Image 1 (cartoon, rainbow, N blue to C red):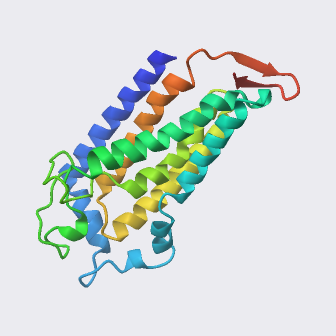
Image 2 (spheres, rainbow, N blue to C red; image 1 turned 135 degrees about the horizontal axis):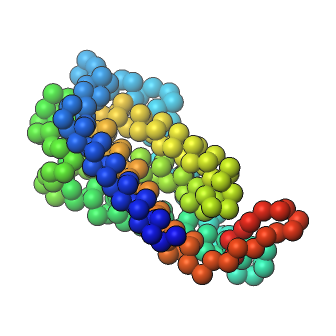
Amino acid sequence: MQSNIRREALLVIVFLAIVTAIIAATGADVAVSSYFYQSGGWPVGERFPWKLLYRMDRYPALVIALFGLCAACYGSFKSSWHPWRRRGIFLVLLLALGPGLLVNAVFKDHWGRPRPREVLGFGGSQQFLQPWRPGIDGQGHSFPSGHGSAAFYLTAPFFIYRRTKPAIARRWLAGGLGFGLLMSYARIAQGGHFLSDLLWAWGMVYLTALALSALLLSCRTDVVYLTNHGEAEEN
């Protein structure tokens, strides 16, 4: 199982590198943002439902993480909820370490990449930077997207159910990716982020989820067949 996770992580990293190179070679970051920059502003991003998505911010992610915290606590007392001790901790740590620490505290607050609305050609005064080029620490908060990472966090239950209940896992993956893509559209339309910022927001959350699932969802796992449901569940 650990080797499968390492292989999956490597594939994700290779995918991120290839797509980032394609975006840079084709100028897609600037091209996509220029589609939304109209008459000196970003009018599409101010419309419904894109403005609403922006205001939703991290609240959906916080709801899931709060459920995880409650489930982990409840699982310490209720035997039927024992599997949710590790699952709940996974949900809490993924939000804290992925969107919280890695995306926002480590990269976004210090990488210094200017937002689209801050660069020349889009009403700003700064030079456009590729995502791999750090700018001035604290003066640019484009890379990666905080809103995007919180939206893609909604794929978290996919990692919990992927081995035991794949049908449910696929629904969470589709729903989380769908919400993440909608948030990505909103943030690009508002001049807040480039396309590659959202790509890496997803990538960082996914890689963090893989690492945490290896630590919390794969170690010392017993498979219990519930006779009343006929399904396999982690213990």
